[in-house]
Length: 67
Image 1 (cartoon, helix red, strand yellow):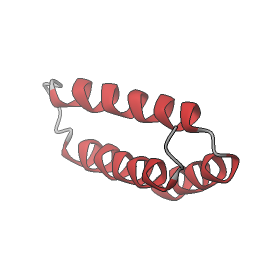
Image 2: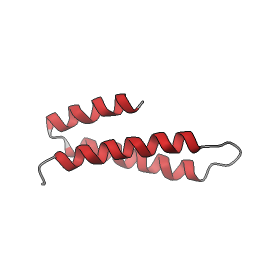
Image 3: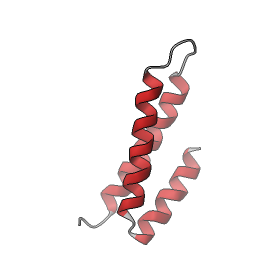
Image 4: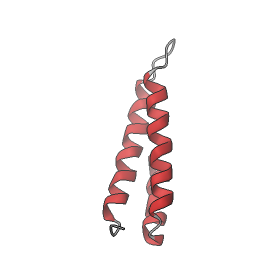
């Protein structure tokens, strides 16, 4: 999935679409908060995946020109 997120982030960076990047970042952060509270199963792998995606999105945001 991270490669997919990388490609999506690259596209939004090329378009200079900060709003879209912030939207997917917010979504992934919400997902991470939900995963941390999961019980009955081990969410470690999903948490690691979402954390990696958040890092990719944040790196993309860091390359955009500040508004």
